[in-house]
Image 1 (spheres, rainbow, N blue to C red):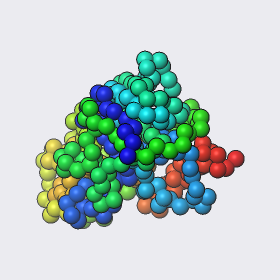
Image 2 (cartoon, one colour; image 1 turned 90 degrees about the horizontal axis):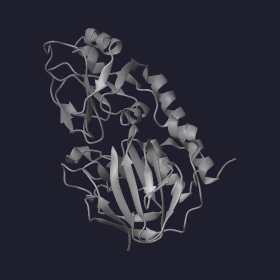
Image 3 (tube, rainbow, N blue to C red; image 1 turned 90 degrees about the vertical axis):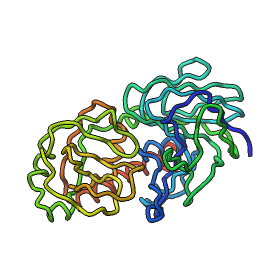
Length: 326
């Protein structure tokens, strides 16, 4: 294996991620994986330039190769060999050897070059892809890092990423309008769960739809805490603990909605109102602490149509930047 990249400075939000551990919750492991899959895929497409699937198949997007997920920015990497990288997602200052460079384009680095990612100014999470087959320990076919479970490779300062470099990538760029489409307005679409009807949650549902919430600074990869008017003053229901899924909206005793993300616990007993659509989970992952969000209920058939439209849009963008379509 060839040393590819040395982590010069890092923090707990710099993580190696792929599409996550599918089917691992029964064994007690969370799904993990990139929180904003479309941004991660576009970074991967820029540097790898291979998009062999000419037929649109949404499930192909759940097989993401490893990328580096960076929350808030503020990290540095040193190239240990000639590599091509690309950064997509949150927008902020990027520098190579202290010279400004652009997000959403391929960057050719030679051994000794230092890539510095400053604090993001728009969005919360960026994705750094490398044109190499990255070598990392795997569990349930995934190398995704979860700090609390101590699985996956920790990208602390001094850690080296190794792998097999690929041929130098062509110069590719992501249109500015596409980069901004990855940071959509924070209107989150959800489908109410049948469970909500079982405990007559109509008042809570109405309150959820009518109010604006802020993203709490206490949010993390386990979930987004929403601050705003309490949906209830005193809990009215007790539930048995059940398996949880990404995007589940829980109601803790304080009545402040909690939206579960990829690193959520495997089971929980708080009442659950609904589940966000996958594309709304990706949008929520880019909302910064203090930003307002709103919940918008949509029927399940509508969510499924919109989900497929979002995947088809991503498929088109990947085909364009990799040159597999006009």
